[in-house]
Length: 278
Image 1 (cartoon, rainbow, N blue to C red):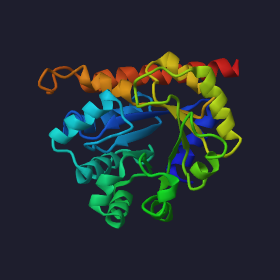
Image 2 (cartoon, one colour; image 1 turned 120 degrees about the horizontal axis):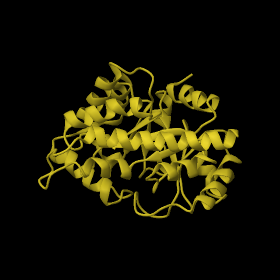
Image 3 (cartoon, rainbow, N blue to C red; image 1 turned 90 degrees about the vertical axis):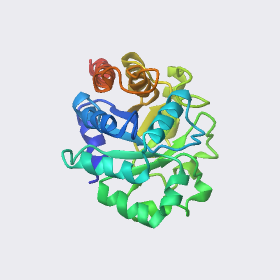
Image 4 (cartoon, helix red, strand yellow; image 1 turned 45 degrees about the vertical axis):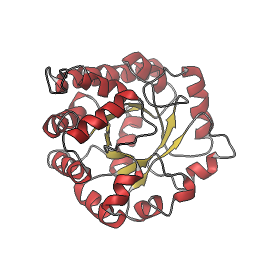
């Protein structure tokens, strides 16, 4: 059983959805970013989704774009992101880590070399948002062959005709994008999300997690009513940004800000589980 399978199994046994937390590697600087990642599981995160900084993140809203630029300015790159995961694994062998980003940094690093180094670092899978199913030969299939999960995005515009192609080589879980648009720019319609999750579940046995627009414990609770997991990214990145001074340097306590939010999100998911069990 992989780390992802084990984690979803544990959450199912507890009668609740998994909390998936996104942070940008290297934001606002490498040491602070590591401290944030290291604190996430203790605050209630079940799965860590780690952003790979890139200059042109087409699916990301202003908050995550800004986080990526801060990380790049601080010198973060692909090799340092793998090193962050390796360091995290020295103390945490169980929490799944999914690397999320775009294909360009992986292509420049070299696919074969990247997969070897990612395995050694302890990464469990990938979300590469700009590789559609028609380009599976580029990275998806080599990643699957190397034992990684490859998580695909389904969106409100992914109809039943397109869904089989999206799901064909998906592994680990399915990521349902709850809004049309970029990350962190709108609040989901929770009723429509529940209907969409149920539709996707008719096509796959994989867990379905929901992200984009989830910002509070109450949002997380509403999503957790019908999904196997809840992804929160922009709200966490915003919590980091609010602790920074005008020049981008740390002025407050980013770790405390993030862990307070993650605890609220985890509590929301547990409230939803309690309501379902009642």
